[in-house]
Length: 246
Image (tube, rainbow, N blue to C red; front, side, top):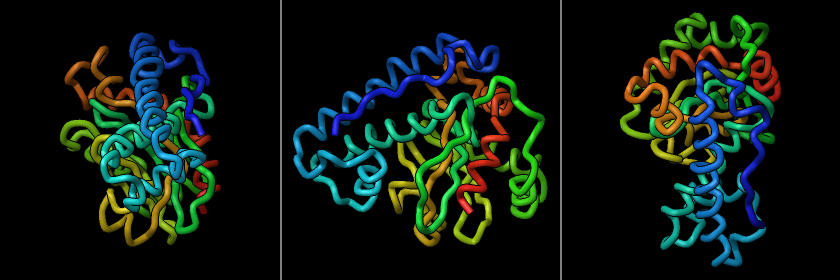
């Protein structure tokens, strides 16, 4: 299977003024394309990797079931392709995620027997906040939506260097905030920490690009970028992701 760059499901200027047009264009056509090109170059050399979809490839990366001499290249580029595909998909929506260079943030919904990935991506016409079952779960897990934002912001801002912040749901239905370095993700079992290994968490939604996405407009002002990101979270899609993950 040859991977390809997914179309951006909204205009490059759709997230202005929170994420600028130039940032969106460069991040999609340059950074994400590089991940696609690099992972294809590696997979083409190994017949046992050909035919795997992106989810299965990432799972094998995490289990160490890929050739050792290209494991790092696959982790970086296969992870980068999956993370960003999550990020762009399904119109404008993010269910809590941020990307590299900044501290990508992503909201993932997971369960022991992982379903097909869903996402929460960006929404130019952002609603006021979460509702329904998702809001109830947030309040049960964190106490309030503001408390969730505080914990999520901390995960994104304290991630040293490049990485992702994730909101995940455990098989028991509890929401948890965590983060991963570089292009690692929860599909790559065992790279996130004990909570992921123990609960077999799996991602459903997806991320918001960071450093590269952050740098043109926000430069080194990571907290400012993350605060702006909350303005484009699609809470309605987040609710759908949460329902699908339960």
